[in-house]
Length: 330
Image (tube, rainbow, N blue to C red; front, side, top):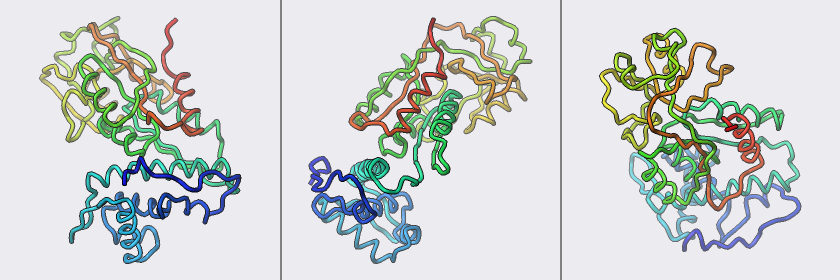
């Protein structure tokens, strides 16, 4: 049975209690089982997941097996070392996360418990406007409790996070060098890309750098200095690079995993990186500046989301906040 063919025999009521929440069903499927599936996938172990869920290992195993039988799939391959999710299990996992998120939204909108902890997650490349937008979301809702996540991560993981519904929104850029490959992946996972703005490439360097007084910078100017970029793990091809023009040969290369390290090396080694030119002095301080790079290139920066899923209230506010913090053409 395909997950797309699931029918829900209980949908909306004006109020829900916890029993209602976990008995929304297809053919006997419960949200509790889906929660178990997601936890096992995240832990990679039945025993570890059982401890996390505060249930016995046999009970958890039986619940997963019943779900597999009901859906007609084998979600995990099992061995003495743990469990590994199968290909059809990955599809089941994606739909499970979607249903759990929708149940959360329903509970939040209709439920009696108005004090439940809000949850929201974004995965993005290293953009200061993405951080500023999250600050706006937190200030807008002004909740006593919340569980928000901003993952500044690798390009492939951004797409995968949105596909797996680990994050509601992803932020990355397209260029004429990577657009075909990234767009193909986005379409493959039934996601959508919405452009926020188009930027010309800029060089990020420290304000005491020998090139800091120039109005613009050429590639030849940069040859003596270390080139800094964000490491992309297993997907370290130029298609997934966070920096445009990453395919160019450079004599001095340093790869890092986090923004703070990159900025420290910009200052300590007179290094440079290439990005959109959008800098937040509030977040990055006055030491980092951006200078136009003299190349005929562009960066189309935008969001990726699920094509057939509405944004949560937090997602909608976040999208509006992004537009406030990005450059606007006159």
